Amino acid sequence: MKKSKSKLQKYDKLIIDDTEYKTLLTKKFINRKKWVSSDPSLIVAFIPGVVRKIFVSEGDKVEEGDKIIILEAMKMKNIIKTEYSGIVKSINVSEGQSIPKGYVIAEIDIQINEKEKKE
Image 1: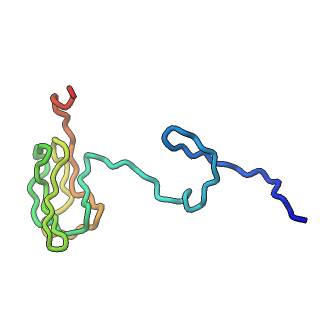
Image 2 (image 1 turned 120 degrees about the vertical axis):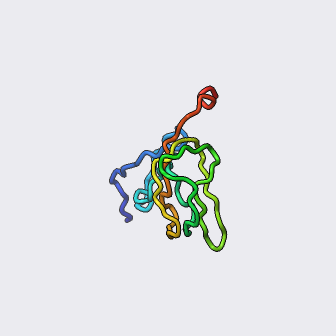
Image 3 (image 1 turned 30 degrees about the vertical axis):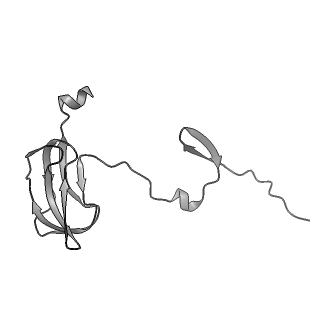
């Protein structure tokens, strides 16, 4: 005779696109690295490399698309530009420094233009 599981299993809630599901979550899923939205005021290295040239210093005003640094990786020179206008709060690298992927290169105090507010 087979034994049946009479224990009540505890289901977890999983919400996807505003729909709630009752499910059993695995330990791997529970212990996963949680997704965190990126901070737009931080300029982060998208690849490891060596800082070859820095175009700005702390306190400089920058516009969207301005060059911040040149990051050399695998003999290619990658120009890192700003995505927003603002004032440079801090530069966390120096020329010739080797940095890993994900390293915070600079921080910008984002300024919203009057034109952007209207849109």
